Length: 332
Ligand code: G3H
Ligand code: 13P
Ligand code: ZN
Image 1 (cartoon, rainbow, N blue to C red):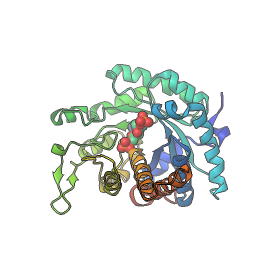
Image 2: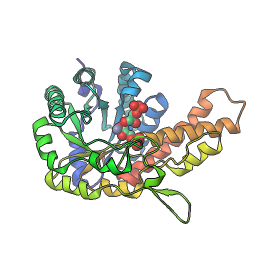
Image 3: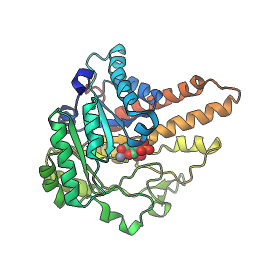
Image 4: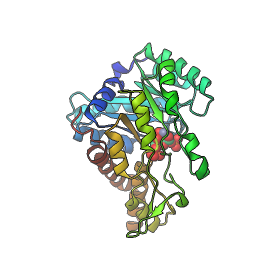
């Protein structure tokens, strides 16, 4: 058993309480490799923003859970080297799908875990989330649970609203599970294709797809019923069109990729949404840069020569999110 405090990590309790009071949100960035982690820590240290670094099942399969945990430990020391005296870094399990996975993360030093029982029937979701919360809380590890299912592009347009979180369930769910934060579904989804073209309108000036707005009415209803309770927004990448264009003009193929407009995320960050998950935008920044550099320098074969610029681009992206979208700069 390794406790997160011994690794210099923090849980999300205080971060979230301050974010709700201050009307901003904490960035939760996924990482799978060294360059992403370096860019996240450089961005957070430079802006003095609390940050959640999160590890998905895909990341654990790709990079190995143990290695990722040691990288997070290294990240705390790296942040100090960069001049951030008391780094506010939480190491979080993203979309944990079983008690065993959550327990193993708690036991190896994660400071926060998500148990995603959102696909289960309501009572089963409660039972599983409570089991995780009961265990994690013994070690002061904070727990995110989820209610409502994030829409996928494969869904029929007409059925999407039925996946939204039902405000009438949130009080019962949070009380009975004992979770510390609640991920909700109000119209976001994972990946770079968040909406089908037929769900969007077209901007007459740019010809770009304009996605439908998030369900702020549902978010406000949830806030009313759970005042001051930390709410989490998954699937919050904006899918910057400049990256999509670079990818598409350098041999890639991402037709009709579209995300959540930043204006809507700014609005969400001012509410009780205090954790905003961003993964796809970082993948797009990395891919766009690697494609561009390799196209411009076809003779290059030193990975540092294309992953280095990709790391710089991701850092720029993270700083932009922190300063211009979430408003978490200067809060750590
Ligand atoms: O929730 C989804 C995250 O973007 C992680 O995705 O499972 O491909 O690592 P992944
Ligand atoms: P995006 O795919 O929109 O970046 O969402 C990431 C996420 O929710 C990770 O849990
Ligand atoms: Zn997610």
